[in-house]
Length: 257
Figure (cartoon, rainbow, N blue to C red):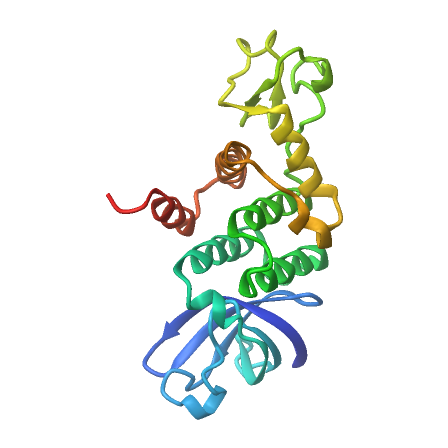
């Protein structure tokens, strides 16, 4: 790959030796990129201390002579999202979203819609435009839809009975079936949890509604708890692993022992 310039968000930063960083970045037009930042650990002057997690940068990279990792030549800050990193709760949520993207996205694959959603939630998180929990619900629902893992809320995954026809305020859901299971089928398919129909409607809006109006959506405490429990179980099940950052986030929400 020859050199290029792009706008990208830092997903991961790993120390490499005593002097360098290896960065994983997410770009709208280049997808996931790995690049080495030479001497970035030792020299503040080299990149001005902007190679921080979640930072939105204008970067220029070049190819190495050996054909290995791309080399980060220049980086200019567009938004460092400093308010996120100065708050442990905001950092916990942002780390979870970042790790999800890094785990799921393959190198070089572009996903402009995911990039836009990620940029939006980071901006809202940084300026406290929307509370952390609804933002996480929004991001996770959009992530699932973009990843082709969208839960089926419309009908029973087994018999196709419409959810609207289920005569109950709470609906069974199965992780393995990928969504709703009606009472008649709940014995034949493992039903892992329940969601209220009201919560399901809110989740559907978070997936398909106007993202700029997300701040107007109000979750009750019960609906918020249901939503987070469901999404933070459904996503790890379907991507095949639980992100380490999710374990930290859950422990943080439980509070001190």
